Structures are given as C-alpha cells and as structure tokens.
Length: 583
Image (tube, rainbow, N blue to C red; front, top):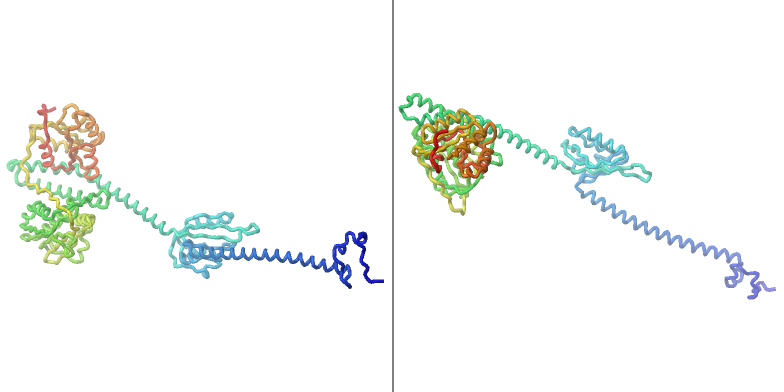
C-alpha cells in the first residue's frame, strides 16, 4: 500500500475549509502540521517586518524632530547670547541655573558666581526699594507673571543701576511651576535723562521765579527813583541864580546816587535774564571804528575830569555781533579803564584782526595799578570787586560778569592780561563778518539844544502822586501845554474822550486795570486810532515792552524817565487844533 494516495479532485469533503487544500501537494516527508507551523512563522515574520518598518519610520521622524529641536535650541541659544537684555533661567525655587552673556555684562556676575543664588539676594543693595521686591515676590507666589517692574539693583562693584524686570513662570506637565524665566532691561540711561530733565525744569522754574522777583523789585524801586531823578533833573535845569552852589552840588550827589542805584537795578536784572531765551541776540555787521569813536565821545567828559587821554586805533574789518550788546560791553570795559587809571594817564582802544585772521579783537589797555594773577579768575564772578591798590572802587561787581556772558552768547569771549604796576589789557574777541557789505550805523548825537514844544493838549494817566507831580513840574515851563491828570484808567479814558488830546501819557499798571487794556479800548474808537499814546512804566522787560508796542502804543519809556527824551518825542508831534483852555 503506497504511503501517499492523492485525493480525487471531485472529492471535496475531506479538504473543505482546510488550509492544505489551498496549497500545492506537500513534498515527501512533510506533514500537514509542520507545513502549518512554517506558514504561521512566515506570517509572523511578515507582521514583525511590517512593525519594524513602522518603528523605523517613527525613529526617522523622531530623529528629524530631534534635529529640528537641536537647531531651534541652537538658534534660541544664539538669540540669548546676542540679545542686549539680561536673561536668567531659574528653578522652581527661583534659584539661578543659567544666565546669558548680557547678564554678566550688565551686572558683572558670571554664571559660576551667581549659580544657585536668588536674584534679589544677588542684586539688591542700599538703593533697592524693599517694597518693590516684596511686591514682586507676592505676585510670583500667586503664580502670576511680573511685567516691566522698574527697580534699582546693584552691580558686582556696588554701582546702582535701573532695570525693567519681567518674570514669567513656566508650568511642567504636572501643572506645577518648575522654572522661571527672567528678563532685565537696562533703563539707567532713561532714568538719568528723566532726572536731568527734572533738574532742568527745576532750574527753569527757579530762574523764572528769580527773574519775576527781580522784575517786580525793579518795578517797585523805579517808581520812587523816577521821582528822585526826575526832580533832580528839573532842579538842574534851573539857571545858576536860582540855587546856591552848595545846594547844586548836593543835588548832583543825589542824582549820582540815584543813577548808581538805577544802574545796579539794570545790571541785576540783565544778569538774571542772561540765560533766558528772551535775551535777544541779533547779530549783524558791526563797524568797530565807528562804534569805538561813539563810545569815546560818550565817555569823553568822564575821562577829561580825570585828565585821561583816550586813543582810538582801528584796523579791523567788521565783526559779526549784536551791536547793542557789543556797545554795552565796550562801554563797560572803557568805563572801568578810566575808573582805575591814574590821573594824567592814557587809555587805548585798539581794534585789529587776530593772528589766525578769523577773529576781531578790541583791546582796552590802561596804565592802572594792575591785577594780581591769582585774582584774574575772580574778575568775572558777580558781585566781585578787587583791591585796586587804593584806586577808586565804585561799582557793584556785575558789569564784567554781564559782559562776559553777553560775549559768550555772541560766540566771543573776554580775556585779561595784567602786570602789577603797569596796567591791564581787556580783550573782547568776536567773529569776523566775512563776505558781507558793512552797515554804517548813524553818527553819535551831539548835545541837543533846549527842547521847544508846540501847543499841546496832554492827558497824563498815573496813580502815583509823585510821578504826577513830576510831569506837572516838567510842563510848568511850557505855558502852551494844557495838562490833564487822571489817577485811574476809567478817568483817563473819560478825559481822552472828552478832551480829544494831542497825546496821552499812560502808566501801564493802574489801580483799576492795565494800561494795555485802556490802549485797546481807545484804539477801538475810530477817532482815536491815530492818537499818539506813550507808555510810561517801570517795567523794563523787553518782552513786556514789545507787547505794549504791539498793543498800540507809539512809544514806551522806562522809568526813571529821561525827561529830555520825552520832551523830544513831544516836540515832533503834529497838532491839528489849538489847545483849548485847561480843563
């Protein structure tokens, strides 16, 4: 009987549903059971192969993700290294684990020195506000972030610095905070700028307060000075027979003292306002040869009284400066030279170009006692007067301080050289005016003849009785002038409307309002739009003078009044009607 009998193809019963029925006939010696085990092993091998392929793909994805993460970490590390803000990474207890180079640059602490320390313990110092640190700790203890809290910390060397501090808690997978990231932004420069700005504001307020005080003081003192100097001028106008010589000398002393007090007021106000923006510097071409001759003419009488000769030499082209301030500086320097020169000596005014040919120099040289070299730096300090070897020391010690500051505002300077026993040289240096045509200022005014006035109707509005008396005394020599005095703005306006005067003299500060408001009301009436109106005020601030002229005043005279100037203005006024009888 054979070992293997193939089944009939037509007999499905024994093999239906059997795996061996779908296979080819097994080789000799292989049982059905062994064939089934091999197939199962083959199927398992296929399954494991597929699993390995899937794991390989997953592994590749993990490798790609790791490469990306590594690249990202490198970029983050690069950013952390290059960013200007200081960055700290702290653990759950807020102990420092890592810092970037900017932290070391800002604080002076390396990673080794600060590792494991609390930020507050490391950076706090005498200038650190404990209240701010407490607020930061309380906020973080509640699990909240801290955003841009300004705090003063201290570097490793103890120097304080200001930062904006931000702290962000980081949650772990368990929902608990496992680390903190802190960012410190250095704001020391901004804080210094704010502090400097605050100091500047305080200085400006103090300067404005000082200027306002001096302005009010000047105004209050000018009113009585107006009466003192005004009446002495009127007395001096009397003929020689009216007053004995002794009384005339006394009047001269009063006038001199009043002028010195007025000079002190003017210089103090000028000095207080030198750093204000309202100090007008209007540079233009200045012909020094003409200006020096004008200044010599103005001080000729004072020099002759001391038998002092003034020699003027000028070989300097025009300079670029403010003519008014330049004249003031040179007037002060020449006046000082005359004051401190011995009788019979010579004072030189010499204008020339400096060696570099870019600066014009005016030297004022005297033959006085001279100045100690140790005293030279004190010359330009306010209210400083030096021992001049027994010479006269009149003055208040403000003239040189004001002159030096004015020269600096015009991009110039004043320098001094002196030898004891041989005199001093004060040199004013100013930039040359190159490439411009010179402007020729007018020649100095000669002594004016006695002022004659036409018939005039005058309304004088002034609340100070002494000032009213001064104006009444001034016009007493002119019978053709009809004067009406008013004490208030309301009375003055009524007088103007009823009298239709030729001129109105108006004080600015009146008991019932401002003279500026009165001027506006008068100018609003068509018949008075061309009425000459002259402001008389003790307020000498340039901006107030400009405001009065803009309001409608034709002239602004500062008290104490220069009577000759006022009379000269009145002498040029047109009159269209005869003066009516005095009201």
